[in-house]
Amino acid sequence: MSETIQVYVVEDSPTQALGVKRALLQLPQLEVTLFHDGLEAYRAVQRNQPGLLLMDLILPSLHGLALCRLLKFHLDYKHIPLLIFSSITESDIAEQARRAGADDFLAKPFDPAELVERVRALLAKVTAS
Image (tube, rainbow, N blue to C red; front, side, top):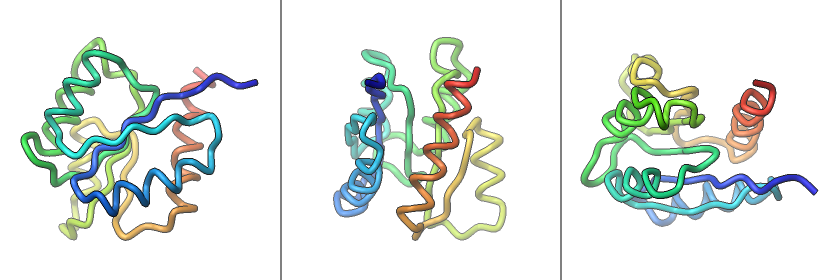
């Protein structure tokens, strides 16, 4: 039996958060915890590091890019794979996310199957290293 991987999903829309969780539950090794606030998620990571973090950009308390920077430029958390998703349509938003340290970016609305494939790819990189 494979090891359970804790995944934190940070999304302020309860409907979208549940959609992401539903898609991720196609991967039976994942245990998904939802957060609706950037600061709440940051505090949770400090208490218990997840194996993967997925987050929206527009979040209450702490913007997704700021949260990404806090995590990816901190020695204790930079190893956590991080995927940002957003409905922001600025042409360079994916590049902004990557400069902030994100491992991947997915534009909303996205196909749940594509999300699952991106998560698989991120997890494969982690297990390969």
